[in-house]
Figure (tube, rainbow over the protein chains, first blue to last red):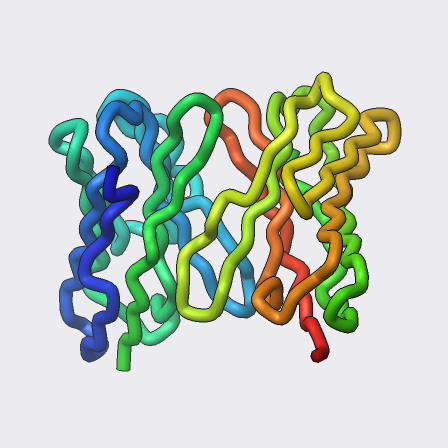
Length: 111
Length: 109
């Protein structure tokens, strides 16, 4: 298995632009998580899905952030409009047999 | 379950053993994990232990769990320069995972 696949790996954008991050979980994994990592706050859980249904989005910072999981093999995290404070590494992870597997992350820089 | 504490830094010499410590708060955690993150990369699962176990050994890695004190440790034997990374402790139960802030391990040649 190729593991959790995220794209893009790097994105640089200007404040106010829409950003879409993508994730393909490991086949057969029923739960998917979006995390954000910054130096100041460490690793923060934004939202997680179970069987494509959002279960807990209490970590989503504000209405500018939204996440979808239209099917078992794809999820998106969207930021609209983006702000410089959104600059971080965004990780997707999928859960199988008690093990949480992370993607390589999407490094977002908002200028 | 949200308070997972780790020291921020550890420095050891190549060939020595490293011990990274972690404390957690949720006694209902089912699994306790150790992840490794190298610069610019994602978190890589190193090992995990079920909450009903006291110890797990996997090659150079030894995980010790003290449930009474809610203390978890990771021992790396014969530490190599390639072990330099940030190590995260995490606890998990019912699809909730809480991560520590990570311990940066520096291995000096």
